[in-house]
Amino acid sequence: YQRRVRGSHKMPSTTTVPTAVVLIIALAYVLAIDGIGSFPVIIDTDYGDFMDDVFALALAIQRPEFDIKLILTATQNAERRAQVLAQFLIGSGRSDIPIGVGVVQNTGVIGPLNNWRGAASYDLDTYPGGVYRDGIARVIEIIESSPNPTTIIELSPLTNIREFLVRRPDLASKVNFYAFLGSFGYCYGGVPIACNETNVIRDLQGAKQFFRTFWNYALVTPVDSSYATIIDGPDWVPVRNSNNRVILTLFESYFYWRTQALAIGYIYDVEFDPNNSSTPLFDGLTVYAAWSTALLEITTLFVEVLDNGLTVVAADGPPVDVALDFVPGGLQLWKKEIVDTLLGKALRGRDCKRKLKLQH
Image (cartoon, rainbow, N blue to C red; front, side):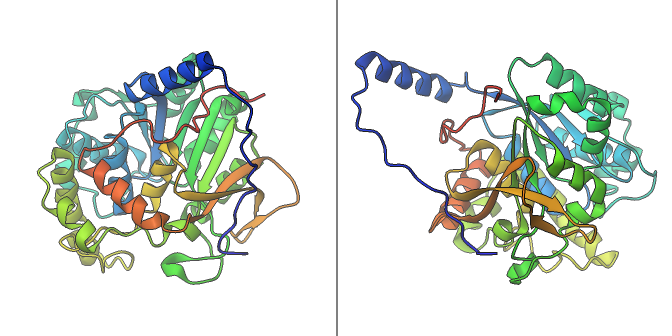
């Protein structure tokens, strides 16, 4: 599959636009910048295994567009993930955000962050923002009560989404969905071959169902566009030297994660040193896409998941936008925007492509 796929572009119309219309558009833009353009967001994360979830949440909780209604924990011991997530939100000063416990598959140890800040003994009932033990039920309530589509940012295997679709498949039409999912022509590390992406292979049926569902809008950021999303060199210096509360909490967890990952024999991402760089920000690119696609090359595809876990272009089905690459020069510009967001300097209103209304 070609590395870079460009969409078709129509020439702009030369029709004269009435002054009143121009003023209305300008007012709408100002209102968006002033904060009225925030939209409801639910984040689904397998927090605790890899650092890209931590980076993704550090971005999300500092974006002024995001009105985060719930962060849902996914896969395996979802309750332990909620305990670890609570430590990050408390440390970052965002313990106002509610947590939902997703489908609990076991009660075992999760990834390297399993007991960060003593999370294993943390009483979730004391969490200030509130904890919903049936996180799927809370997702349904949020979507049902919103007059506009709810954005779901998917950073994990789709175990919770599979359960959501069992309970209320009718609500998919009220969801704008952004997911890190799939591999079409490039694998981890930039190897030029499609491969089994982790979120797909860890819940194959969930991934299959995602691509068979007609959402209000759906976009995926596959491995193809995200394998090179590492912040390092001069871009990393202001992040490493920041006293931003979110960043300080992020680094505390990053150093802890790497120590524990090396101790338990992790083979992924342990080569990255917190003093020098981030890990690949697979989930961070998905969060970015939920606030802007300006730096991404998007093509609309029909996609299916094969039984071996590969994502391939299909002949028909629900359409999904796929960010296969950055626009020329876009990766470096993206890194700057990510650094600005991490440092708490995010600007609102960068992308007018908001799908705020239901599509019919």
